[in-house]
Length: 258
Ligand code: ADP
Image (cartoon, rainbow, N blue to C red; front, side, top):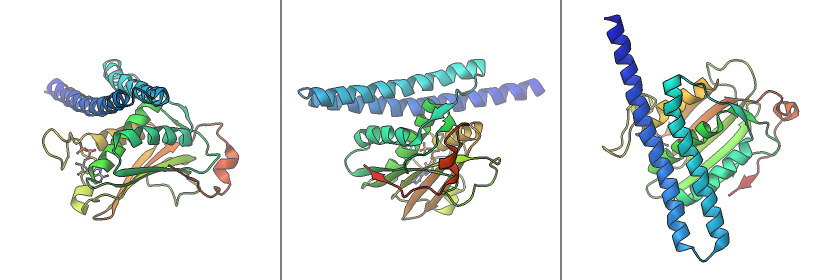
């Protein structure tokens, strides 16, 4: 009976993985598709074509990270953490999202200069952030604003519960969308919980985002107000050997880009 239970558990994990891969792969295809579509329309503008080709290549990289998850599951591989510069990460994401989310959604990045690097698997982190941005878009059918921000834990008001002592970076994805009622907010991290129609949502985006962030030694926090919008905070450890001064000094005033 024990072996059967373990088998059932493994099957369930595999089902979750397959659903998550389908979900993330759709986002990658969307990014490549919209870049290719724009390239076709702007074929006469070599600079635009070059930029769009790079966006498509970056999306391909995320696609490879998605399929790598399957391989990692097969060999129970670990995440490949590396130092990641938060401002550059968010700037790259903004450029990509500006194309894929449509003109009705204004994407902005706010990151003070001199932020220390965070420690995470870059491709997986990008996938998580694209997932969060896709949720934000779905919550703003009439358009709105998407703010991506980064700050050190010194600039944020207190660590969320459950984080080990240490220095962290906080990335936030904030939308001006529909927000969620408390009964939805209470369930969003459950695998397969979705309020979207069949074929629209898998209910795996946030469950996988939380899994990745916690495996990376961080925490994921969702705050939402119905009718006002949602803020998702991703806390991740600072890379050792990061700029200690930036970690302890009060952060300079944020700069707005986008
Ligand atoms: P999916 O997007 O496939 O439904 P998720 O796990 O990413 O799966 O999200 C679960 C549910 O949480 C969504 O169906 C939606 O109801 C809610 N949700 C997530 N992000 C947001 C957001 N930014 N604004 C409003 N609701 C959200």
